[in-house]
Every structure is written in C-alpha cells, then in structure tokens.
Amino acid sequence: MQNNSIRFACNGCGICCKGRLVPLTLNETRQWLERGHEVAIILEAFEQSIWTAGPQQFAHAAGRAVEVPCGNSHVRAVAVFAGNALVQCQSLGDDGRCGIYEERPLVCRIYPAEINPFIALDPENKICPPEVWEEGEVLFTDRIVDPVLADQIERSRQADREDAQAKIALCETLGLNVAAWKGNALAVYLPDRQQLAEAIARYDAGKVGPARSNWKVRVDAPALRQQLHQVGLAFDDQLPTDYIFHAL
Image 1: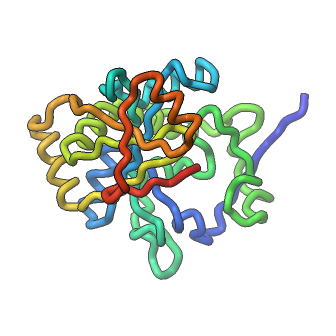
Image 2: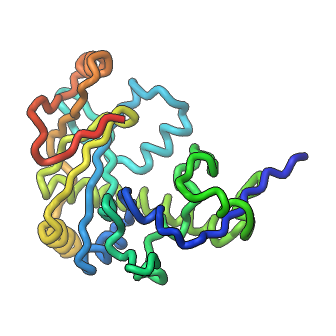
Image 3: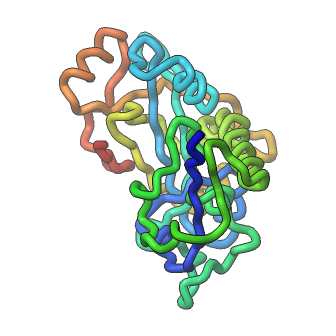
C-alpha cells in the first residue's frame, strides 16, 4: 500500500506569523491580553435544516457551538477568539523569531497540521516555501504518526468544545450578537482590549451569566437570505460599524 508521508522542517521565515488571525483557547486569550496584545472575535452561525455538509461535519461544528435564539427560531453560534496578527504577530521579534516560543498557542504548535478533522494537510494550500516540505520529521503518513502532534490537536479540539459556552457568554456581555452565516462570510469584531479583559475577569468571578440575547445574522447573498427568512431568522440590515463583514 502506498505510504503518503508528509515531512516538514520549519525554516523560521515567519510568514505564518503575518497577515492572519491566530485562534486561541480561552486560557490563551487571557495570556494574550495580559501581554498587552489585541484579540479579534469571529462570529459564525448555522442551522441544521440548512446544513449542506455531512452529519459528521455537523456534529463537529455543533460541538463548538451554542444554540441561541434568533428571530422566531434558533441558530448555533460559534465564537472564535483570535490573536490579532493581521499585520504580524505582536510576539514576532525583529529577528523573525517567536518571542513566546515556549508559551505559544496550541494552533502555533500544531502548524502546519489542521485542527479541523475534515481538512487534509496539503502543502500546496500552505503559504510556507517549498523547501520546508523536502526534509525534516514525518508529521503524517496515512495517519498521524507523531504522538505529540496528535495530542496537541486533540487538546485544541477539546478546548473548542469546552470554551464554547464561555465565549458566547462573553460576546453577549460585550454586546456582540450579530454573526455571519458559516461558509458564506465571517463577522470579525475588534473589541477594546481592556473591555474584553474586564469581561473575562467578570466571567472568572462568576458575574457573567449564560447566553440569553436574541441574535441576528448578517447575510447579503439573496438566495441564502431567502432560505434563512423562511426559517424565521432575524437579520442585521444596518451598515456594520462594530464588525467587519468578510464574504468568503
């Protein structure tokens, strides 16, 4: 049987530390804020009757989501807290090296592997230079062979599930309750760092209750909007001022 191995040897070019948002667990978000760095929040929503992928993909997405009211129905909302590295990671040094290497987030430890179990690791879809795939340790064959990598991937997925309720509750505390439709667009918020840190502190002190806001979805695609209207969902039709609507 063919052995499809993938090797990877990071050359320290730092390209993966620039022009992106770095997904964080809730605990990593606390650490990121304590360093004085900025955190973005990405909100997506979906609903089972309009789900177009398979049942396993739905189960994976639902495990990361929280059911919230939306209009006359409900949606499942996913909040992704991410370190703002849209210019470059604030921990990237002038020498191109990570300034928090021993404390770097799980997603950085896992890279270039994929956290989503339904996305295969494909070097052609990565921004790393070609030479990094020519040598180094084997990350994958026809299955994950690196036990440390496998453990880190599972820890990241578990944190997604465990943090879901807290992240949605924090979004509501901050008044963030408009989500884009999963697979169609992203609603990206750039909250004030101090306000987010204070909201997390209140949550840790037990002063933030469970999610209960009535949510809205932002959808500009006419056909999809008509589908969601038939389900009875509420829309945000105002010009967005507190989030960036990024169509996919």
